[in-house]
Every structure is written in C-alpha cells, then in structure tokens.
Length: 518
Figure 1 (cartoon, rainbow, N blue to C red):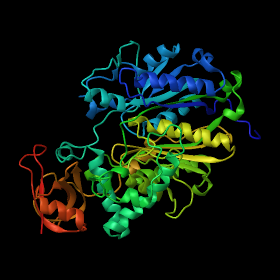
Figure 2 (cartoon, rainbow, N blue to C red):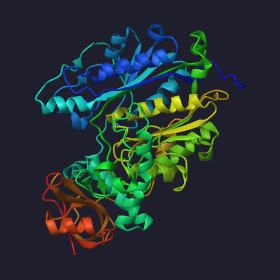
Figure 3 (cartoon, rainbow, N blue to C red):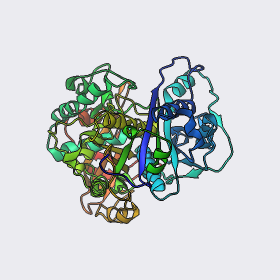
Figure 4 (cartoon, rainbow, N blue to C red):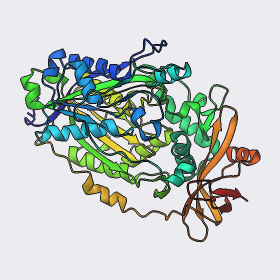
C-alpha cells in the first residue's frame, strides 16, 4: 500500500455468506444458525478463524423480519437479544450487542454506524451479520408446524436507529403498507415522467432487469439462478402473472428465501496486530444515510428521491470520487422503480454499460428480508479484492423509497482521518422540500397522479391511486369502485391524469376514499 492508513481507520477484513435450500423444515437451520455459519465463514475469510471471537467487542445484527412491526403476528422467530445469542453460539463475549431497525437500508446503515464507532475509538473489532430463513418459516406454517426459533439469553441489547411505522393509518386502510402494492405506483409515475405507453415502459423494465437475472444465474448464493430475457420478464403469462400492475411476478422481490451474510470490521491498528493480510482489507471511503419525506402521501413526487440525491452528494464528497469512477454497483432492487430512481438520482445514464448489480438483485438473487444488503456488501468486497484498486457502490432502501443508505468501497486505503458528516446535518434540508398538502378525506373533482391495480391469482382485485384535488391541489389516496370493467380498463389504458370525482371515507382509517373515473 503506497498510502498508509491511520490506526483508527475502519476496515472490512472478512466476509461470509450462505444459502439454504433444505426442504425438510425440521432439518433446516434457523436464521440465527445461518448467521452463525456466515460469521464463521467471515472469520475464516479474515484468516484467523475462531480465534477472532476473543477479540470481538461489538456484535451487530440486522433485525429479523419477524421483529418488524407488520410481521409480529408470525408465531415464532423472535429473539430477545439476537446479537447476544449469536455471540454465545460463537464463543464471543462482546461488550456491545447491537440490533438494527426494520428496513432494507439497515445493513448499510449498520456498516456506516459501526465504521464511525471504530473511527471514534468506541469499538475495536465488530461482527455485523444478518440472515433470514423465511422460506423455511412459510413452509413450516403451511405444514402446521411450529419451529423452536426463539431465545432469551439475557444481557443488554443496544437498539441502533429507531422503529417507526412506514405508513399513516389512512395509508394503511388503503393497503399501502404492502410493498407489492405501492412500488408499482412509483413505476407508473416514472412511466408518465418518461412519456411512454404502458407496453413501451414494460419492455423498458424488462430490458432493465434482464441483466440482473444474468448476474444471478452465475452467483453461487442465488435463490433463482435463472437467466431470463427482457420479453419473458415483461410479458404476463401463466407463470408470470400480474401482481401489482404494471409489475409481473418476475419484477417483484422474493422474500421467501433462506440466506445469510456477515462482515468483520475492525481498526487498521487491530488488523495489523492480528496479522490479517492487507490483501483482505477493504475500506469504506464514503458513506451516507438519509430519509425521504416519511409518509408516501407526503412525497414531492413518485419518480424522484431527494434523499438519494443528497446521500450520493455527501458520500462522494467524503470519498473524493465521482460516479464515473465506480467500477461495480449494487443498486437496491426490490422493484424496478427503486432501481430507476436510484440510478437517476446518482447520475448514472440510462445507457450506461456498467452492470447495476453484483448479486442479481432481490427478485432473482433473493430478497432476504431486511438482510439482503449484507449479502450485496459481502459480494462487493469479494469483487473488489479480486481486482485491487477498483471501486464499488452499494445502496440500500427501506420501507417505500423512504430510508436510504450508501457505501463506497475500495481496497485502496483511505487517506487521512476517517470522518463522515452526521446525517442529521443534511436531513433537515430534505425534510424542508416543498411537497403537496395531504387531504385524508377528499371530496370533489380530481385527477389521478399515479395508480396500480392489485392482482391475485385469479386476476384484478382492486385499484389504488394517488390523486390531486382540482380546487386545492391537495393530494389524497383512494381506491376505485370495485368494479371489474373499471379494473380491466385501468390495466389496458393509461390512467395518468384521468379526471373523476372522489368521495371521502366514512371515517378516517376505517374505510377507503373512493375515486370514480369519468
């Protein structure tokens, strides 16, 4: 290394990831055991194996989806202190046992947070891990079986970040808490901004996502290692039905996977003391975390993200890089709209030839609940080590294009002291973005801003839309009448800007507003 990094510089030195495809639910490993496997692989990858555990003073775990606010009805899979349980399994006795919040942004946020602790001298050696075994859980529930996935190891758990519902009560009444319902609404807004027809845009989505499937087909931990054509992804069929129009099944993140990953982080000083080879070291050159306006109905619009724009600006300023310097990307890809918004806000041209994923993305590689980005970070580190001096960018996204994290990585050392700007210093600017007033009980003439049609296995079930009142410009959320001809029309013809009338719900949060198109 020509540049000698400072002692307190954080560095990632070990990674491990695993996938489980065991069909017998009673033989399958729990998410905690998948994390143990990934952690042991990461310790081995760092070159010191289980000797690592005597040095770990911080174990940080991504929140299980069973601990998320909208999943607590699940009958098993909760741990009182998951990082402490993991430490007990590994033989580690960390002084800090940290647990992240709900959200797909959490892994990158936790890496950013842990790097800051290391740089400040508050942590020396950390294990950051995440896993899900949701495929096994759902299979067990389908068979009427209860699995012994729980533990109460005691100790003090430190909760990093905070838990906050992603939708208002009115948004929840309109079924916006389900990602498969709301992300297609972003997609139709993007289509409107691009001025494309429905079919033109679907083919563009297929063209965007087909390269993701090709990457997944070559990744050893992928859940669906199957390359698909743009036409196959974009065209509805018996195997590829609509889920939330205009999304077919092949455009949706798949959470029913069993996957886990872990990374080992420490100070440069400790890496030297432990004799970890420098060819294992990967540095976090830039990072940032930011939230868009929290509730979906409050957003500036549905085709942009001021938070991603700001986050990219801050992370690149910290690193001294620019978007043209990046060799590898992993843009969060729960749905195509998330990919497009992230790409556009970071300044990646639509015709840029660089692949946008190193894993294959959540619909094809697998969307392991809140933990997917642990696997994308692990894969990114492996890519960068294989070609020293290259640069990688990872984004993460929680809730509904709501919470975001970004990391810039390279084997090249960080120059000077590692220091990041506190996210709170720039969050206020995002929160101050001009945005529409929300009317939770709208009445009168209005126009559709964006929409989707929610489909089940037997076809269209109901339509959701964001609209604007003609007289005030206030935004509202509504359903259409549950009328088959209307639903069919919404899936055959463009509805953006369509006029109609809206009537308020009988009681806020207890019923749905109804928009009747003209």
